[in-house]
Image (cartoon, rainbow, N blue to C red):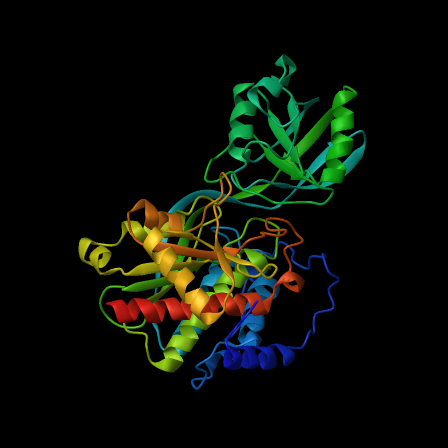
Length: 431
């Protein structure tokens, strides 16, 4: 990767100053499901309040990621931890001088606590998928491949169906299992480790349990041997989430810089999306230090992981004047894995960002999102509003417990921040 010399020197100095005080082994997870009374938002860090900072620093990025991923931890939509993250965003943005409001909206979701699977006298660690029904089911285990409609045998009716992750979305696996009369669904990872996931806003009528690939192999063997099993899905119902909107001035948003701050269940979410949340905070502070916040709105979107609900609500609430005033939306989501940035979005805004990146020596490529993947910029594109999405070409271990702070590359995140700042400058000059 290349950067202009002065910026490169500044970034390298900032990166060299970053200490690593975390002794968590790589790939391990320190997050646990917190009790309702334990979810509290960290105070703004001293570094984040420096009014003289006109260039982003890796120190700030690292501190934001630690605060969100370690101190708060998992942040499922509608949970106390998601609210703690919203409070944290509010406190940070207010400390930079933005006027902040929370946009509350209703959701249909569930916060999933630790669930269990039992078979052949052994108990396996599991989580319910976000959107799973609660309940306890004891029934025969039936293996059904990847869960395609043709994979489900007649014996799936009344059974606990065991399926491998892959080929089709979780929501389709659930629909097929329910249509076949299954009483519960177990999805095991296509890799040895554990993972977490969401049904994309769908609410299942049956328990949907996620287990590691290693445990899934044992459950598949039990199903093929004609064994029975028991699943227990524990969920807490919730019905509200919120966007956090920081405004640099009165009047409509001319430029929106946003990213989601919620996670799937049982992950730190350092990459997805503490990295993007850290980036929007650093953009916000840098713009404030440069005194160029007029018409700027910094938005932390809630409930992205269950169907882009927060960003869809934000767009829905824009009136005609606000829509006409919007020059562009910059979405920062999962910008911290590896070294290769990518972008997607509306053609004109994407072309502008690519031209700016080339002039600044920042390596980034246009990319197509894989089937079923999306992010909050899509809510703007669906309303025919210009938007661009910055992310990393490789997603890494997102939606798994391996999405931890050790993997977050502050250098790559800072490149995304620099590109966002330059794009904002270009949009302001074009107005």
